[in-house]
Image 1 (cartoon, rainbow, N blue to C red):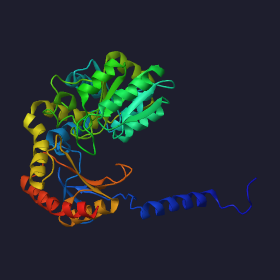
Image 2: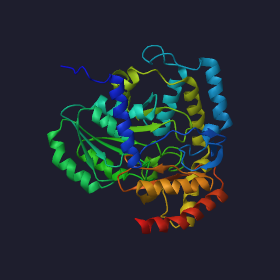
Image 3: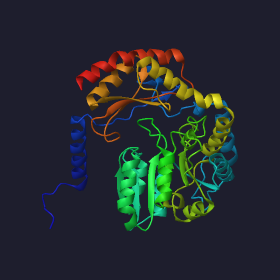
Image 4: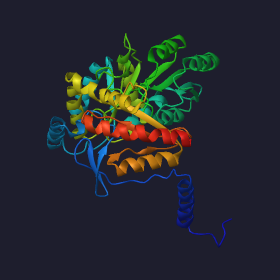
Length: 397
């Protein structure tokens, strides 16, 4: 029975949201959207303040490359601004098939399937391949979209300690015999820490226990191993049967993909709900990614520059040598990360504070990323600030 004094549903909804927001505010975990006007690949403006952007994932600056922009403009003029429908209805414009063929060759796979975003790709893959009675083991620091896809699959989901092959082996030995099918999910380059997964050992365990490995290389392609990605950081290359990636970081566009066998891709074209029930990516985005991919394959120096700049920064700041363009400066509390971000902003740098739940509690940080478009002098100035500040934060923690 409903109460005659009950508030309207809209009022209780707003009360719920306001209470939640107040709690986030008290914990210094509330997020706010800020309008950012990008002037070029690394220079932006927020609230009238000019800032140098050191937290973007546009590692090669290709979103501002004249050739990439021209390709997008030409595609919009030829095919229109939208694809109109799901690819299985009428949305399969020719550029999508061209990009899939190029990505398959680039990643050394039989086939490729392009999705509307990297998040959608990871929402699609695990649920299409596993279900109730199956097992998914996922690195505890893997990206949120890998966890989301795993949870949607209805398989049993268990984490293993970050990059700990011993823990992964133990869990496979204990849990794999009970499962019909099994998958192992990991980032290739971890988005918040910048380290690489131990892919050769992980793939050896996958073969030993008949578990299908899915590697998310969103932050590896274009910047690791001369642009080839995390699999090629090892000799011989450690090629997973499921190689996922994104078009929105080094490729400077928007979209996601899975490179796999022809049979797997064909199955996903039929069963992957984020493909079947979603409008296909816009032609301009796909054309931009095609042009960016061509640049990555021909300009090795461009692909090597972001990590080289990260190493320059770490040497000057007294931090461990990085293996990717992502450098975490872990400060511990949300308040410390917010304060450091604010101080950098006052000095002309945009470095957003990363707080839980994006990272584990107690590991709030500055996540500093490097672009091929950054200048060495700006990097040296940022390093001087960080090296002067971080001992203070470490002592406070």
